[in-house]
Image (cartoon, rainbow, N blue to C red):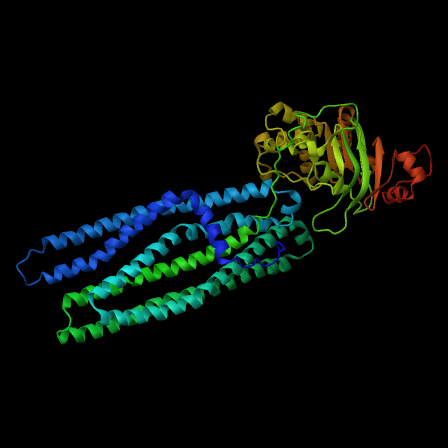
Length: 594
């Protein structure tokens, strides 16, 4: 399988075209109108040289030129109007296709299973929604019209040239043959270069996003120049491929334009000689030259359309890479599943002989784990790195499914519940504590959008953040990105989010990691309060979190090594004692805090 960091494989032509058609299919009616308008404009263009010949043939005769001149002017006005309407129509259609593609990708990214979507770097996902979809715009709309109109115009022009003079047509066809061969050689190279450029843009976005996230580390490590070189290198790589595409495109235009100009010179010389010998009428030569000049337009239209389609196929290859993502149906439950999980006096959550791992790993992370989360109280999960603590949380939240065994909510197996049934009962505060783009209110009420401002202030007060928010110029309406909230304050903001409408189960992935002593005590009070009415499960690395827990589960090597209170585990489990000693806890005296 292609990884997100590897170059995107070239999508087969048929598959790529099918993907482009899939975006255009909902708008076929408008696209058809655009094609018809283009064909009408093409017909007007094809008729103009014949009308000009009619005017020239009337010179020196008694016939009035008013009719032919009027027709020429009418053709000009009608053709111009048709072109304008077509341009507006296709422009709007193109933007709607881009919007549809972006909606589809955004829906897919947010609905995808977490394990799969996290295989992509954030910057990669952003470029697929932004720059890649733009390349679909012309490929799925204007290029289709240009291909049809260009082909009709080219064939129509050749047919009318044949009606005017076959020897001059032979000269034109020779030039077209040379141009066609060049197209066949150069157009695929444009698509290849465009695809490589888009891959490089994705890498640029990902590298820049990662560097900006770690900007404090970059500066403190005096690594600005290295990061600048690394990100700039990605930009330069994209530029190299884009410039290569420009070279090929420029060569196509030069060959097409120069070849036709040379052909016109030959036509003019040959035609003038035939006029002087009486084999050709002047009006016929003028009309033929007008077609020769006009034939450049369908050729350039076809060249532009082919180039645009190649760029669209490059974008299609990158967009198609995300189509394998499995989407979560958060509302789906078996027909016999309970509408609401209810208490039966048992544990709130339970893992029963669960073995679980991740898709990219051959070996499971958890092995035959049985663990119960009491309906009330504080359960702490400890263990060395890689023991499986985060995997337990991922299972409880249904980010991943077990390979064997089962999970239960209020005694009901997870497979009989919808994802929403499970997640609506659980509030989760992750260790990274990301803030949500928006205001403080948006962040605090993110999990409970129907809650009131009073609820928001109560939650902020619980984590001792209300005074800080009150000092902000706009209070709850302050944009978080514009505030000077510290890492610890952002962590408390995430905890406050979980406290609005107290959950049945509160999962905390080391929620006190960035807090000072005073505010850590406030969070411990929050945990103690929540544990009296519901379940609190913490992944713990801090002394206070461990000591205050009603029960501690020790994970090691993906298995439950032991469980009990702090005092019990200190007395019987060597690994736990080493863990405590690493936190500089002295356990010598039985009545000590340890």
